Amino acid sequence: MSHFRPTLPPVRYHILLYVIAVAGVLIAGCGGDDDDSSGSDYKLRTTAFKSNAVREPGESGTRKVHACDLLRFAQLTASANDSLDLSICEWDGRGRHFKLFVDTAPKAQLRYYNLLAEQHEYYNADPELKARQIKGVGEDSAYGGAGAWWTRGRNQLVVYDHGKILKVRVNVDGWSDGRARAAAIRIGKRAVRETRS
Image (cartoon, rainbow, N blue to C red; front, side, top):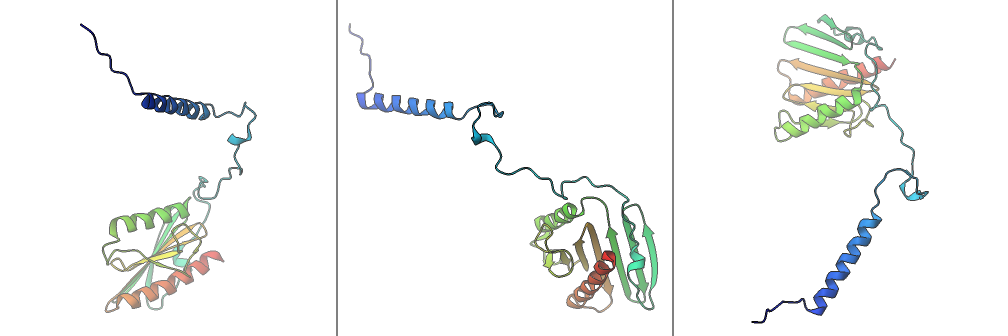
């Protein structure tokens, strides 16, 4: 009884050998070690690694900013709440409430970007909580595309400027979103100017 042994046709056999040979060359060319003992310039960085301010750990308690010293509101009573890297001031009167947070803790620009990214991620479909970016208030070169953003459901403006995060809340009876936002922008600009001086 003869045994039939199937063989690959010659064309397929040559293609298979070609694929194996090419794969061997590619694997050999992918090299292993990260050191540059071979003397090849291929593995060298083209630019030196430079850290930036966002990566720096920073140090707490280096800035003393008091929110109540930055702004004055006629006929409103101010109350302060200060801690190591956070100063909060609230101004209250009949039907009017203004609040300013000044956050000087380290990595402010990264934290500002994270706040904005989270707002976009969780609330972008909600018109009341959607972050609406505003230029010309804070440092517009900050990560995120603008130096400030407004959330109408909270009546809150969040501003980044030179290592600080400022939050302004405006609640006045009878004010529209547009009027509250315009007031928050004016307050934010004034607070930014004061913290820079």
